[in-house]
Image 1 (cartoon, rainbow, N blue to C red):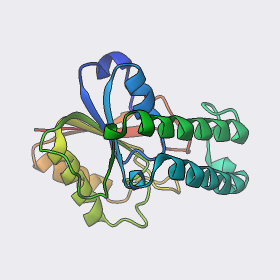
Image 2: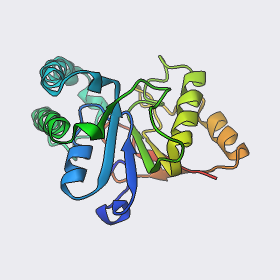
Image 3: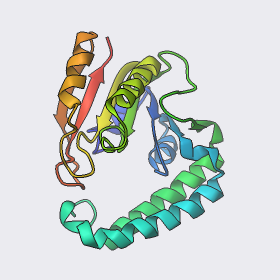
Length: 209
């Protein structure tokens, strides 16, 4: 919620898509609170138990390297690396439980193609995918994904963060913003009350026109 500067009240009555959602708990917790949230990710081609087993191994692998780069992170929301591990494992377990309880709300898909209708969701949230992997995913792929997110969005898309894995602003971001504005969309860069990776403290809001 802090990543996207949202409140429960803002989400009530909206149909929300988290894409790509990964092994996170947003959809599970949101649905427990009565929100209409759907998660979409390539990971959901795997059964919940398989995803949990793989996820815990991934967490252990990543955390072993965190000590070497912890100077690149801000430990405010998470107290330390051990606290981060606890949060990640809990989110993974909550995601798996959500997949079992509401399987129709965990949709497998591989971007840049989504199995949804035009204008199906009021709000789309996308975290730690676009811009984050700017060194591996080229600009044309970014544009294809945003075009597809706009297709299935009725009102708005929010993207977080706006930096790559090195904490640098995505190099094609200004060009992409100009292109979206030329298409008639309203684009804002908005500071948010969350920062774990240094410099990753802003989101892009695209209001569809």
